[in-house]
Length: 311
Image (cartoon, rainbow, N blue to C red; front, top):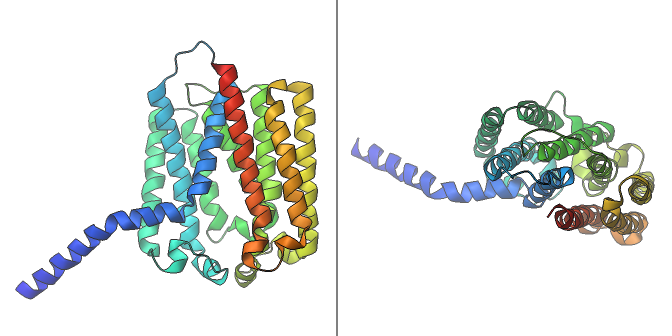
């Protein structure tokens, strides 16, 4: 009896001591670079509304941002739980695929983050319960059967676009009530299209092995690598050119972010068509990395120029 109690105590101690490590692994699994870009979109939504002269409710803004990030972490962590087979076939080094984090633990943390996000949304009030609820539903439907929206590039792209728009709207609502202006509309639509029509396609270049095994019908698999690359390049250039035109005609405050987008679009298009992004998985990820870098740059420039105008 005493031996059983001792073994149980040792097991409890091991579990407690491994808790911080497992929580860190969950954050890594949820992709910090993605979490950061969601936060930048959220803040951009607030900055673009520019509530000049209003006292900023910093407590509410901090809670709103935390709630949104919890929802995003929940969805991306759940994606890692559901995609472990594909990730291993694609040689992913994220914790679940690498065996450094159990699926069960990650699933519990994902559920906890989702529940906390919903509770926080209720505390914030309208429109957050709807925004967070829809975001979570789309995040789970993206990777969970029977829906599994990510099996199709069209469905995946649409999901990414909607989630991008929801993030900007959530940021715009963070100081009390939702207001939509032309600057926010142009920026949010442009960046969400960039995510859905460029990023959602470019990420598939390096994941065809796992996607094929999982029965996915991505553009890279259905239409072939060469055609998918032409599509990414064309979409990137179309969005990159349209943004400066829209900014010049309707939203001059967005000219700097729009110019940054045009430069990034040229890089993404060039890499998508270049032999330098073919061969190894690392090289095939180059267009997607350029897509992500462009997102960071455009949102960063918006936050710098928008903050100057705001203050």
